[in-house]
Image (cartoon, rainbow, N blue to C red; front, top):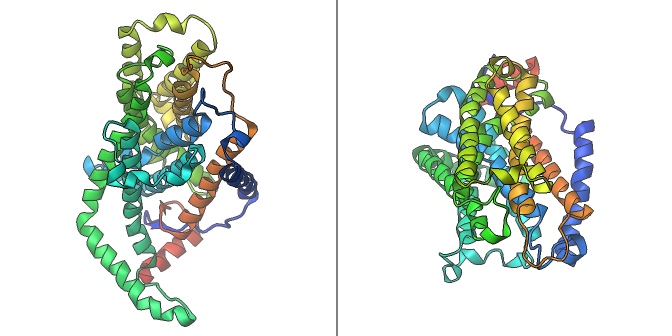
Length: 414
């Protein structure tokens, strides 16, 4: 049995992927309609409610859930925990797609989406804008993620480029580019890894800074001057559960035994990161004397307790249990609750806590907004499946005989 990452051998289309494809097609149709006919036709957004679930879920939550990329990179490449190396590539692909689709979701939310390239021009830089810093970090970090993906591409195609017909003349130049990329990145990949971790810390915290400028428009249950730190801590806290979540789903989808020896250890790390975030949140509420609002009743208090209990306390207790960490189903439930908890937190911060001063109605997303969000998630899942079936991303130590044979053939060809 080999721990070498190999392309997954499995039919791409199943009943599940066909259902996901249907959702993706509907969501993409709504996306194209929004780009053609504008925001007013497809959303409940207006001057009083300038953002909705596309910012709270597609952007803020999507970027937070992509934190598995930088947390796994830091764990393995900076802190030297090489035993977790097989978890890095799936987390990298998840992060790469997460950031890509966060940008795509952002385009849907922008009124003049065709001007999104403006921050690239130094003449349009605005150093006093938090959103400018977020945009620049996301743009640069997305590029870093794609650069970190290049070694996987090289591993897959180096020595195997064999274009047919008139394209045959490109075989040697492409092969040369692959070898050049391998030689170059082998020297500098550590620089990109460190840059990626640094950039992630910057913009994960800056997403919280976005709401610091609205103290009079937010409930004190969530508004705090340390919101940037809480956003960063929550991203780190969800990074390791997201690795578990993705790994267990992939194992089930490709009929592989889960890497429980590693995932249970990751769950133990999640106990500390999630626990640290929980303590920080409780201490912040205590210092600001905001606890009475949690018992005042109403939708905000209810959503606060849903976030605290479902998204923090219950999964924290589960991760702290050795029995749960040794059970794939228990570990999956704990990871899922943590992922849901961060999503609820972002919804709470950007929607539930926010109250514009002169609004004459509340905001609730239209069915089109929900379909677009579901469509983006479905499209991400389909592309992820395609990538892991084309490129050596997932290690298959307990794969089928066909998987092991394919891995052996790949090594011989290399």
